[in-house]
Length: 278
Length: 199
Image (cartoon, rainbow over all chains, first blue to last red; front, side, top):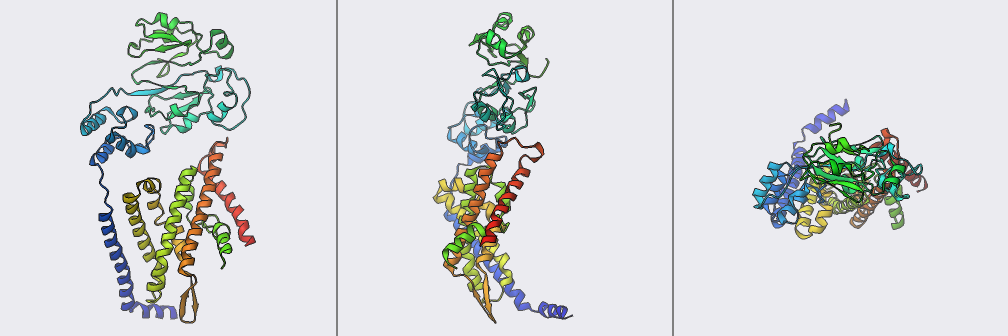
C-alpha cells in the first residue's frame, strides 16, 4: 500500500522527470556537437575509387589475395600494387568493371581451380604410425610425415580446415577438392607443407595426381598409384601437351584439348579427371 | 587500499573476465590469435582508462549534486560511446598505424559490459547519513581502470595462448571449436577462483 502511494506521489514529480530528461538530452547534445566538430577536424581524405572497387569485389574477405580482407585488396588495387589475378572469386564482368574504374587493361584472368597433386592416401604405405598433433605441419616436422613417399599427401586435413568454402574433404586418406565449391583463393596452397596443391584452369578436365620425383622402383615400393615415369601419357597425347619433368608428367594446358587419352592410358591411374570419373 | 592490494585485486582476485564474468563476448570472440587478443586487450585497457577519467567527474559533480544517480547507465553509455567514436576519428587522422591495429576493436568495446562495469566500480559511493561521497579519488579511479584493463588483457592473452595450442590437438569432433574454448575458459575461471579464496 505504501509503495503504491509512494509511486503515486513520485509520478507527479514533474520537476524530477524534466531534470532527468534535460540532463540526458543535454549530454546527448554536447556529445553530438563534439562528434560533429571532431569529425570535421579529423576528416581523412580517401580516394573515392577505393569504395567503388570494394563494391565490385566478391566481399568474402577470405584473405587469399594476401591482403587483410577485400577492403585492403581494393586499396592495393587502387594504389597499383596488386593485380586482379590475385583474386580468384570476383567474376569476370565485375573485374571488367574494376578495370573501367581504374582505367587499366584487363589482363589474362582465366578462372582457375585448385587440385591436389597426390592421390596416394591409403594406397600409399606408411613408414611409421603417427601419434602427434593432428595438423599437417606438425606431422611433416616429424621425419617428413608418416607416408613412405616424401612427396605424398599426409591426409591430416590442414587444407580442409583452412578452406573458407568447405571445398576440401579428406577421403581415402588424401585431400580431395570439390571443383564445384573451389574458388581458387589459394589459402590451401600456402597451408600445405608439401606444396601439393596446384592451380589449373577451370576448363581443364584432367590433372596429374602425383608429385613423386622418385624413380619407378622406389615409387613401386611406396605407393600403388604413384607415377612411375613410364612416359606413356607423353607418347599418347595427340597434341603433344605433356612433357616429363623430374619423373612426373606436366600438362601444358594451352595445348590440352581435354580429350582424356592420357587418363585412359595411364597404367597407374594417377592422371585423374577433375570432375570424378569422366 | 594500498597499491599492491589493488594490483592483485585487479589482475587476479577481482579479474573482470574470470571472476566477475564481465566482457565475456570479446574474451571468447577475439581470442583466436595472440596478436588480435593483445590488440583487443590494449583497446579495452585504453577505453577503460578513458571511461574512468570521464565518468568519475560526471558522477561526482553532475549526477550526485542533482541527486539523479539512477541515470548513470544512460549517461555513461552515451558519453563513453561518443568519446570512443571521437578517439577513433582522432586516431584515424593522427596515427594511422595505431588505427589499423586498434581501429577495428575500439567500436566493439564501446558498449561492452566490462566498460560499464569499470564505470560502476570506480563511481562507488560511501554515504554517511544524507552526505554521499565518492569512495575513490580521481587518480585512484583512473589507476584502477588501467589495472582492471590489464587484468582483462592478461585473461584474454592467456586464453588465446591456450586456444592456439588446443586447436592443434586431436579433439573429439563435437567438442571442436567453441565447445572446447568454453571448457578451457571454465578451467581458467576455476583457477582464478582460488585467488578470491586467498585474497
